[in-house]
Amino acid sequence: MSTELIDLSNALARETDRAAASIVAVHTEARGSSSGVVWHSGIIVTAEHALRRDEEIHVTLPDGRIVAATLAGRDSSTDIAVLKCAEAVSPLGETSDASAIKPGSLVLVVGRTRASGPVAALGAVSLVAHERRTWLGAALTPYVRLDVGLQPTAVGGAVIDAYGRAVGIATPRFARFGAIAVPASTVNRVVDALLKTGHIPHGYLGVGLHPIRLPEGLRQALQRNEKTAAMVVEVEPDGPAHKAGIMIGDLLTSFGAHPITRVEDVHALLAAEAIGKPVMVKLVRGGAAQEATIMVGERAHGGV
Image (cartoon, rainbow, N blue to C red; front, side, top):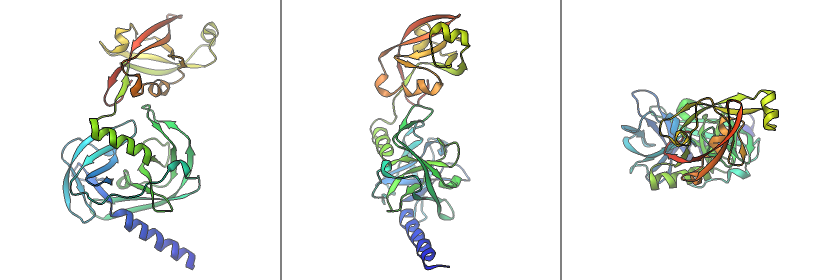
């Protein structure tokens, strides 16, 4: 084996050991676990979707002790959950500006299993987009996709760059393949909000939506270039949309000044600042164009 490969191998092993001192295993069931990162002393960040319940949460610390942790809050829109654990006292350290990372850069995902210790996976950054919204409307700025084989036990682990800094938290949640790094800037924002209020506020209309392709004749009648809209398939009783007169079968074509071409468009417009404000929506009912004003409500854990 060449000296260069030996040096690289040794460097990766050292970096894994260093990062693993701040990585815990998170378990809520008799078998299986995911990973968590000691983000601040006493504060652990993990992947929200991998946290099966809100109570009876335990973590395996780097020294092998199994201790209890309590849920401070969770946000499905960014796949971040925050745990409190007084015994988790070794924060990961310096974070990276994910917007400066380049496609092709090597990254190391470091996690921990509840029984076997640290786990690591080496991969590359395959895509960096300035911003991309998750299907629940949260903006990941930037969106960093990873070409890495992510084991279930490593979900929620740390993504480390070549300088040993934390790019973010690893999750497969918002990637069609591989994984992404929820950037450290997003993690910091969500951690601060969850520790303060216990939840991330999201706007709420009280409807179920399904994308639908508009017939050519209807598009021409509406003088609309976009080929798709969102059909209302469910209206929650006494929800904001119900109070505004929205009905099952309505086709929503615009939300405020923004055209609706897919369900994610609505999610993206239901940020916290929209809560409590009226918004005018354009819709088609029975082939006729109409308008309605909806007062945006709040749902703590997302939703439309």
